[in-house]
Figure (tube, rainbow, N blue to C red):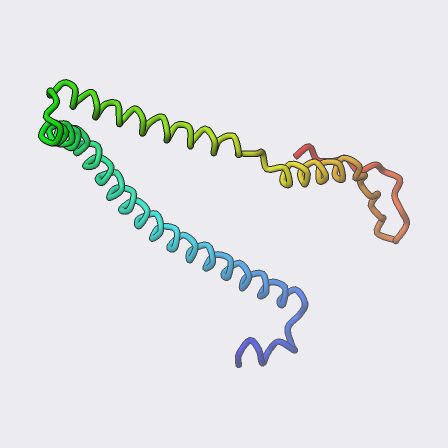
Length: 153
């Protein structure tokens, strides 16, 4: 006989125990699924970040070579002295850095605090600061005049 067929003959305690057991198993299965998904995502993220770091290192190592190529290209194109060509390349880098720095500064000035979240937190704190505990009722239905203390957590 299955548990569904026998449900009419089981007591309330048995039904609650069965429901608790099944709910606990469901929660454990959900946690196991979440762990498996997170492990897989962390592995993918680690591989992706490793590839990104390798690409950044290769890009960083290529900058001096490209700088020399650009300086020698200026020399071949303009016929200027090699020193002037390297100074022009350095000046171009400084100009690019200044433009990027100004762009970053403009973006940073637009950053605002999360005002909606701050207002919501303040409203929640105001509501919770005015909450008073309710007195507990006795077993026979009469109210007890004992104060209920609040938890500090």
